Length: 587
Image 1 (cartoon, rainbow, N blue to C red):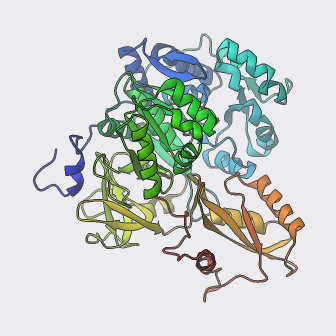
Image 2 (image 1 turned 180 degrees about the vertical axis):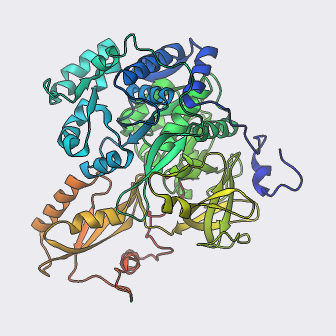
Image 3 (image 1 turned 60 degrees about the vertical axis):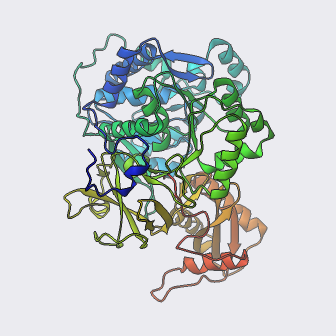
């Protein structure tokens, strides 16, 4: 309840949204089941022309839970879901939640090294993926200790006609999954194995227990595992509903991946808690996205700035009518004022009075915790805290709150915070700290200011991070891969501004023989990176040096390289990471 002495000056910009939220005492599965009981015949999911009602979706989830139980999966067991946006990922996610198991959400294009790290960290013995990704998991199965590979197909949930078309085109090009691999169970056989298996009717874990692990980066060589709970996801859904007004019968175009909090929390779980439905899109191109906009006329869209820039650049986008659009959200990266104004103008010209709303957040709080309020946009501000969340700026390394307009580190608290970093109590203690008010605050590592009205302004990151098309790229990881190549002595990676991807990766390399390598060596190193990194982390630019600038304590002075690039481009560096590396979006 808001009082006259409330310390949140931004509440006046909520326009009727509540200051706080009541988090239901339910697991995510229970929230889905409750909604299915209220609206069994309503559409829940649309995928490539196939519709699932809430009753059908819940039946698929229950059958999947029985199948996992038949494999021996139980409370607190971890299962890796390495899947694009297909019904399988949604079904498995809620099925594991019903069993009290932990859904480990990974990018299906992760490198083998990253996947080994995820599997080792979580202790997972079962992976669910698609046939197109089988070769990667087959190669790492033995040394990663995997016991089961449940292999689905993009065609599993396609309508009959579309399934035939897929089989005759892309399906024909897919290398067949061997029938003699003892680890492999195909999706249909997996579901059949659950027939007659009884799933306990009572919850196996509480809403406060870890049910999901998502991955984010830090200053180490590989991403950290972030432990999230049903309570955190349910709180996010309540907050987003309060802001957006999403209601039964509304629709969300879900192109953001389910292995990211933005896609999983906002586009999928929020919709399913409200009797709305989402349209799953398994891959992105402007053509595919525009076709879905024309066909489904969604109530809500969400994406990273690269997506909105790509839409504006496609002439066909001007043909889309937005008379039914109720909300548009941008996160995952910095949304420039210029892009926001251009997209707002397009929305207005094409029939919608709404504006693109910028968000900021971290996977450590599922996703967005700050949003630019409608009709109250401020130039270059990320927005104000969402219902239930509190933000403040503290002196870096301390819990001391700073006065308005003073640069420091963002700290946040609220019901969506993570439980901690899996297997890393030191990092957890450094990030989650109890302040003098008795609340646990998450120290973000992001730097900026808050004005007297509660608007937040992003300035940079205290941790090195590059955002390429909204995807986190960790310079240390790229550097370590390059330095593992026998030709390389040292490497340093920075981010460069990019009009389309918002940032691109540049590597400075010192070769072991001291020479300035030519095009052949450059091609070899880029190819090596493609083998060991996801595509966003592969350098787009590579420059050979005979030496790298060093600090007085013997570390590579990457800020000197950023400054050189900024001067070369005619700009100036403000903060630790050059243009595009900072982000005011959900990371």
